[in-house]
Length: 154
Image (cartoon, rainbow, N blue to C red; front, top):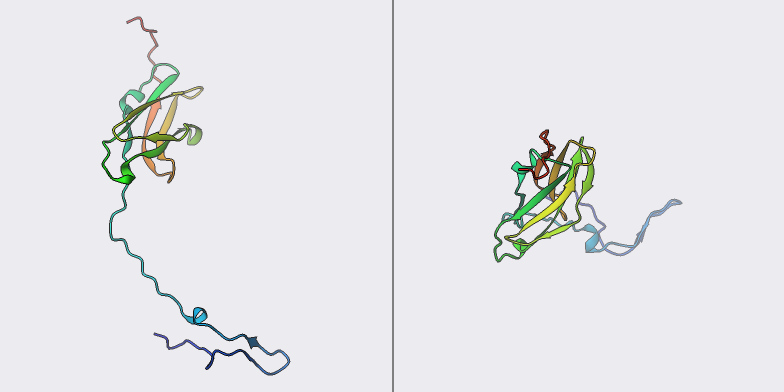
């Protein structure tokens, strides 16, 4: 496999003759040995604690300007990587990010609620991402309902 490797016959410094001579300080094994690495995957990487948006049905028709996002974490295991997860909720309108939550630390078997406002938008795309890797964990759409808010009359 090394048919085309050229090296000086010795490792001492040398200089070629002539006006534009070439000089070299010799070589060391680090300069001519090329390492051959082989990487392989033996086990499936752990995805971490599973966190989802629990109230997707409620968000499809929201009465009023405020809406809540409920996050639900699965029951954790004793695995260190499933002990907790840092997530963030991102809000998009017309394919542009208009807001986000702070970084949220979610513990196993927990449920958390967060409030947001539509402001001038009639619908928003809610995306739940891992705060460290930015991997999308879950998403849904929140839309204002055309029904009137009866203010608790019923």
